[in-house]
Amino acid sequence: MIVESVAGCSWNGWPDARGIRTLRKRRAAAIAKIDKEGRVTESTPPPKVLAEVEWTGDSIPNIPPAAFKVSVRRPAGSSKP
Image (tube, rainbow, N blue to C red):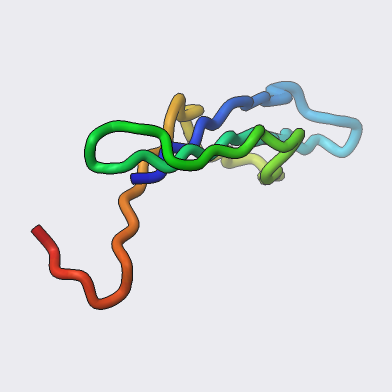
């Protein structure tokens, strides 16, 4: 299992000089790999910014900032439980 922490979301709700509103989402993440017994087998320190996504326009999507994103990766060819 891989656990990735995600933080940061800001929205400029007021139109800028051109009348455009902007949402910026910044993700700073630390990744930890956890084995079946719950032990951390590998981890990395968070980079300053993993990704920055910007939406511009009148219709800003409602995207709540996530506290954690958890994904499970299995080796190729392994059987699913």
